[in-house]
Image (cartoon, rainbow, N blue to C red; front, side, top):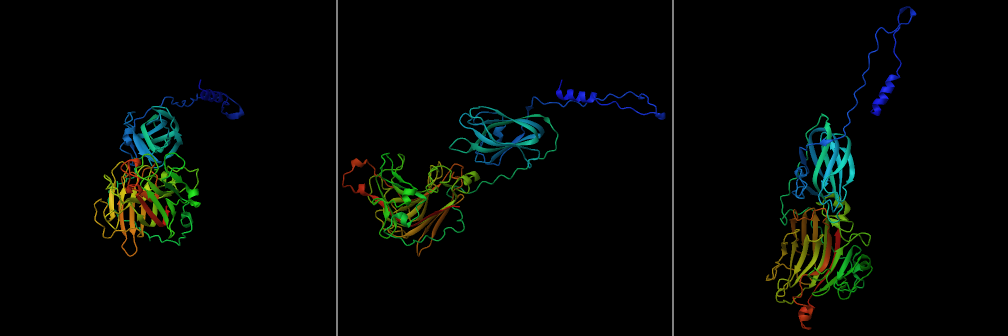
Length: 516
């Protein structure tokens, strides 16, 4: 017998018998026997929730083509899934009417490789939501459905909010299927779901000219009083930079890295990085030397932004406090990063570029990158100076590299072509000028500023370039990244071949990087 029913019957049998009083003070038996009391029906217990038909599924429109409907189609294959990148992305399923919800079942993409993180809520009207549970984590290795119990949930809508997954290299929410089990309709009053309007995709494409943001560029950097007797860190704050030089003192086959603490404590090298006679910070990069990796074509003597400022507990790579992101990136990435958006400003002079044209290298001679934004693998911008051997002035141009697409090129002064005429308004060697690289969201602005001449600014869209994704991190670079190389092995050249002694040299007189 049901324990609740047994207790109810015992309590009922011990109640006193109610009697009625007659006239004359005498007592008599009740005129009518007691009417039997029928106990209330035992509540029905739902022990076998049944599958609920899911009428529709929605998200905020930010999926990658694997849409919400793919998560309720009964297909557990990898190709049929809802995928949306970034923390806080949501999926809502509509049950059609109100049900006594008892179980939610989820099946995740790549469940044998990573765990997925998510929250679950329910609602009758799609506006007021009740939390079922937060910080759910799928079980690594569970292929197919995993069940999450629910109690006291009277709802029509289920919302799953994704918080990415355990993989180190991405932040995707990829749900193969969601299902719901219930214990019958409750007939509660519901409302039709009112979804926020899907954002209109931006009309601009990568590289399209856009309006320059207000305040861009700002005034050019002016050189403070520079002391030629000091190392570079005596005139410049290098606490948030490290330096690559084309030597290999530790024998690992790659160029040496001088990290923040050592660099800012007076490091200099008389061959590659030193203070010039006028106090400027000089970078000298040979055409041949050790490189930062085996996949890199060119040598460099170049600073790399390090927002961690010497805190080696923070990794150099990743969306973390050492690097920055665009304000168009997901909010979780902005919170995790060391900065949002950025401005790199410099005043400098290019002193020397490669001069010797080697067979097959005419498109390389005279090129040097003097500033850039580097992302995880690609480069939102590389800013070039180029002076051809027959010209006395150089050109300025930049490249924007959308992820997995060819570079887009933009000429600011003169031409980037290998047979370009001497640019009338070009920049001569040893002539001081300033540049500013400015990012606001997906707008990239590049400016060249010179005393007595009009400022030149080009602003382009980076919509669709891929740098606003959750896993894309940025850092500035400045110095000399030579864009010329030897066409043969070093040993194949005569010892007096001028090609072996080709180099690039740039001197900086002011340098500043800032972020929100």
